[in-house]
Every structure is written in structure tokens, then in C-alpha cells.
Length: 483
Ligand SMILES: [Zn+2]
Image 1 (cartoon, rainbow, N blue to C red):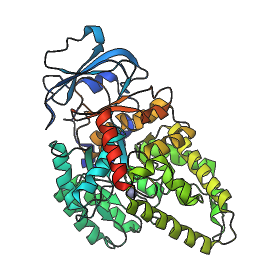
Image 2 (image 1 turned 90 degrees about the vertical axis):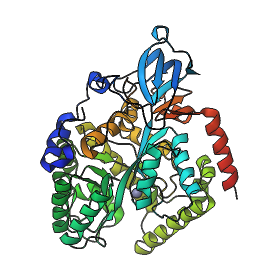
Image 3 (image 1 turned 180 degrees about the vertical axis):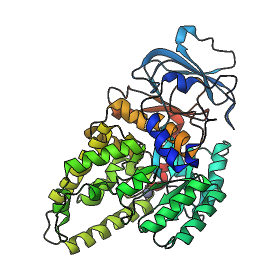
């Protein structure tokens, strides 16, 4: 499936191909790379069998009870009822009885430090936190050259961590004030080998238009924020590949005639449902993916009790400087908001904001727009990996089923990689030929997604990390971060 023309080469085709590909691929499509054609994964050696496990393949609904999954040199080679699988000698077997196996999940708006001076150990801690939560793919949304080296080292299996998709350094109003600046940056970033361009606010519309033209020419896609001057409709129509944080949707669906000095509460209550439906339809048509990062945005507008947030169990895995940084960020944000609107009912405002976002996500999802799982960790209060468990309940509130939420972190990510990034899409489902990115769980996530927290082992590109190893390293990290 990778030898068809790259969708990213021609902007017009992005719309066409992704729109056609949105209905679920047949399982056969996913399994099609022939076994003998499948090469091993770099850095992965050996044969593993996860025996007698409940397989949740995700390319179809439900559980394959009592199956065995055979893995060779980093690839899934067989998925079949346990009594039908010949497990070769010298195979490392992992008991699966009473457990469930899902494809590895993804953090589609994550951050690995863009500062090259960050100690390697700190970066590896963050990578490990993702893995410990079953996240085997991270899309980094603020790039720097050292991340390209890290991506390649991860790919070769020299560093333990998720597969890393690397967004470029930010394109925004400061870095790209003119079309010429944008063109230079697009060419430089594509040449350097970044997997996509990261958009931040401030780009003017004529700069955006030139940027999209050059990006189409050099074959790199763009994703992230929707600059105000561009607006959500134009961003969708000109081929943005992911809209993150639902950026632009609240503004783009606001009822006409709202006064310029309306308060945030009035603005969040002024969503026009007809506009929501129209934008949802446009999003489906253009095949644009959404990375909603709901939990983060709720925290931005809900008055949070910092002490109680910092007392959440996952905070033991965030270093003290990170927790303090988040507390300061939150405090500064609120100081500004309160100074601007001293009399506003912020509890009501936070609730109206959360409600408006959930309703927009619901409409987008119901229209058939594709969702990708992401939290923006380690942004404010989002502990890498663990933040996913804060995000998921909000996706459920917006009407996504448990199966669809699993898809958003696996199969959809593979489609995005294949269709928009021009990367191999041979992951995201438990089928022969796929890269062995797997998570062994103590409970069935299709019954309760909280079971995603019961990680009993993770395989990333064929490298197995047992539940015991995960718990030990987490404990060791908590010890280091305790003071
Ligand atoms: Zn971010």
C-alpha cells in the first residue's frame, strides 16, 4: 500500500485521497504486506509468543479470545487461536491468560525538549513515561535538530522509547513574517528531514498561502494551530493535515452579531449549531485530522485548585522543576485573566468553555471527521503518558466509543502516517506484517478504558519491557523526583 503516489506531494490530492480513505479500511488491507516481504525491525531480534491472550486487533471490533500472537524480529507474523499456533523452539513466551493485548498507542501532540542542552537522561525519562503507559508512537510538536538524531537512534533501537515523528521548529508570525521567510523555512525544514511543519499563531494569510504552495511543492505537510488571520475554513480548505487543540473551531462557529467587548463567558455561550455542523462536514470532506487535547484546554479556562492537581498520583513522575513550572504558568495565566475580567464568574466560564468544546468534538466525530489521540504532554499538568488517562474520559463525554478511542491512538495514527506524512503505515492493528508495537493489559479496555492503566508489559518495535521492569523504573523515578 506504500507504492501509491504520495498524498502529500500534491495538495489537491490530499483532500481527495484522505476523504476517500476515511471509511474503515478492510482488515485485508491492513494485513496485505506479505510475510516474506516484511523485513525485520531495526534493532529487534528474536521470537516472542504472547500466548492465550484476548487480542483486540482494532482493525475490527471486539476481542479475539484465547489467541496467540507470534512476533519475529520486531514484526507480528501470526495471530491465531492458541491451539493452532506452532510456537518455535527458542521462543520467549509471555503468558496472556486473563489479559488483553492492544496495539501500541500514540501521543499525537507531544513534546520532547527542543533544548539541546537538556540532559539526555531527562529526555529518556520522558520517553520512558510514554512507554510505561503503552504509548509507542509520539509526534513531537516543536522540533529541533537534536530531535532528528534522537528519532534515528530510536528507530535503530539504540535508545529505548517510542517511535518518534518529528515536527519542525515553529512557523509563526515571528519566524515567518513574510512569504519569503516562510518559503526559506519550509525548504530548510524539509531538507533537514523533519516529518512535518509545525504551525503556531501569527502567520498572515498571504504568508500562509505561499507556505502551503511551497510545502506542496517540496512534499511536506503542515499541522498544529490555525492562525487567526487564516481562519479555520481556509486552513481546512488549503490542506492543513491536523488541527490541534480544536484551534479555530470556537471562533469559526461563533454566532454572528456578538459585540466586540463580549466576555469570555458570553463568547463560549454563543456557539451557532448550524455553523458547527457546516464546519464538521467541511472537516470530514477535507479529510483533516483532529488532535483535540481536551484536558489541557479545560485546565486553561477552569479555575484549577493547583494543590489538588499537583497531588494527583501521576505527579510523582514529574520532576519538581516541571511541577513548579506548571504551577507558575497556571498562576500567570490566571493573574492575566482575572485582571482583564475581574467580575466574571470563572466557574461558569470554565464550564461553558468545556461544554462548547465537547459539543464541537461531538459534532465533528458524528460527521465522520477523524480523531487522533493527543494531550500536549508535558504541557501544563500533563504528565507524559499518564495525561492520556485524563484525556480519554473527555473523549467519551463527546460520544466516542471505546473502540473508536482505541482507533484514535492506533489505526488512525497509521493512516495519518501513511496518507499525510508519507511514512510507513504498517502499525496500529494486531495483524501479521505489522510492526510489533503492543500493550499487554490486565483488563479489557473495551469494557472500561480505565483498564488502559493496568499495563502488564509493552513491546515497542519488537523490544519487550515487562510490567515488572516498568513498575521498577517508575518507582525509581518517583524516588528521584520526590524532593
Ligand atoms: Zn504543544
